[in-house]
Image 1 (cartoon, rainbow, N blue to C red):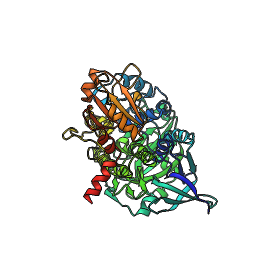
Image 2 (image 1 turned 90 degrees about the vertical axis):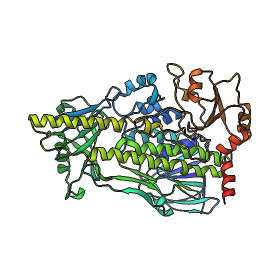
Image 3 (image 1 turned 180 degrees about the vertical axis):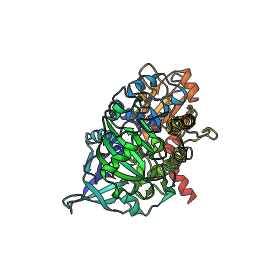
Image 4 (image 1 turned 30 degrees about the horizontal axis):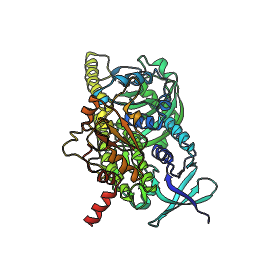
Length: 560
């Protein structure tokens, strides 16, 4: 049997797999992707692209392409809470439209100093862009309608057998590494015998149990609802609680409600499903169901391992979220970015294979952190119940609506104003980072304090009206020189060159940046994480060896 040969096989064509394909292909690494679906997602699924993910899309050159998708550019991305969508508005957390975000980001400082702001767009649209750019790369082969059936890690390579979903054709691929990004029911993870750890299904009044999802079309919604449009609409009443994201701003929605005791999806007709939607709206409007299904809220699970031998896992295959705060898909993108540059460096032999061990060391704690934040957001909304009389047209009803509105507005701010979650993940305990004791500070969801302490995202500033500091960074490594006339870092550049590392030297003589970054030389990884900072007195060869995993191998041998 003829074997195809690739550097990497990717199982799964969701955001993780497609992003990984882009990261590898941009670096000339050959990869074949298999996904059993016939194409990218049809259902809306995730609907919030966080600012850090948008910064990664900017780094790859298609952030504006993503921001142009989804809802009209002047559509508000507010989170609004109602008793029922057409009855009483309780609270509203206002957020900018796509057009406003483009301008607002240029003036924001402190916690929200960023190259990009979040964008509210369905995952189905994002996947199409990721697929288009992956397929344009010469070394990438994207194959929907195929599944990874089995694999064998021989220690020096992995043999993968993929089968066509229809027709029975088989392909055998020999690769250096296999990456499983094949979702919550990951075949690859199960074959490795890796289990999840954490909360396997919290039960709550809402957002904790079996959820019923409708992807529907209802242009009449904007005619009967007397309130300004919002991206996220939340119904809060004691009959039918729900949340509903606008998909296109024209009348397509992703509607989710929790099934009550005795309700089973297989027993619910389409007419009954529409009635559920109507109950949340509070008006008997017509709607067309485009698709329907169920999912379980209440998960906060992280796999016990992200790697066995030459096989890696990422995305939903290693972490399952209740989608409060929209963290699942965004965490998956960060997984892919972290793993992508490391795989490429090892395959090209510029880094030690031990560098790959830092993928799990860095990303698993972040997955635990992020699922924990999402769980707290879900508890905040799910455990807060409507009081009797909330919907009555009375003085009591008015007071109860005011009380609920105060709580829900605070909740909305807590769940969706999360620069700390977005930018604050750190890799302080990674052996490939020159961590500094006592520099990381507290980890709060709503506060991000920019710091160039190694292990975190490089602090951002705007260099002029349209140029982000991140735009000056190289696609691979960057040496930021903040006193280029007196502190050149020539030894670091030379050591990197000897190691086969591509380093972009960025010279900016700026007191503002020197105050922010603290040291005149800053070495920044391909994922825009600070790996080291210091001055010319540092031992350049030691720095380069450590950030590429070579020192890690020596430490492990000594420990063994």
